[in-house]
Length: 111
Length: 117
Image 1 (tube, rainbow over the protein chains, first blue to last red):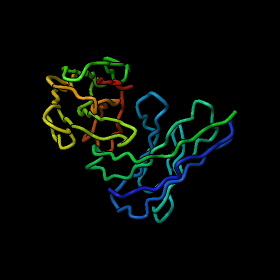
Image 2 (tube, each protein chain N blue to C red):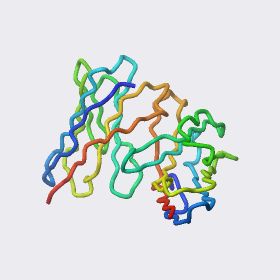
Image 3 (tube, each protein chain N blue to C red):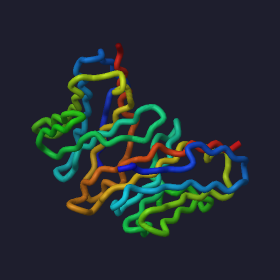
Image 4 (cartoon, chains in turn orange, blue):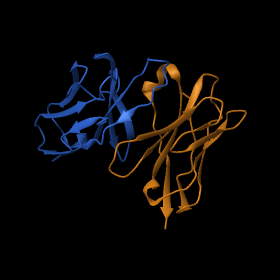
């Protein structure tokens, strides 16, 4: 699976949009981009995933660049409860059981 | 949907004792995963079951660790004998991997925090 690079930490003001970047320059054509987050003392929580097109669900939006070498997770109106470690994972559909969690980005939402 | 249920939530035991962690996956899911999380190593996949059959146990650290899935609604991870270096948070996750494409996300439980003294 392709390796991902994320900033170790980010801050965001409550109510503002949080934009979390992820670089995956070695992504191959059949690999998906997944985002999970882990709130302190809880298990990781699935947020969203995509292949080529931008995706949106009730939690977030995923913007994937045209060359697919990077993506951005957008939380449109961050709340204090969104403070968590956010993991960007790239994996092919057939082997996604081997999700490899890196160190992720610690997003701190400030009041 | 009750989600993935793990028990106990916390376990404290002495070195050399047997430890059994339990997991109830989401009903209808066909795949179950055991992960371990430590500060040093992050989240590591230990073993993966599909339709109750172990598919990949390459992440199991050593013979002291064993996992079973006797039916679709229950799995155990056993450590015997336990050692202080086994102290970690152990997560169970389930998914519908393989159904409707292999892109079904994993749903994690809230983990068991194991402390071996």
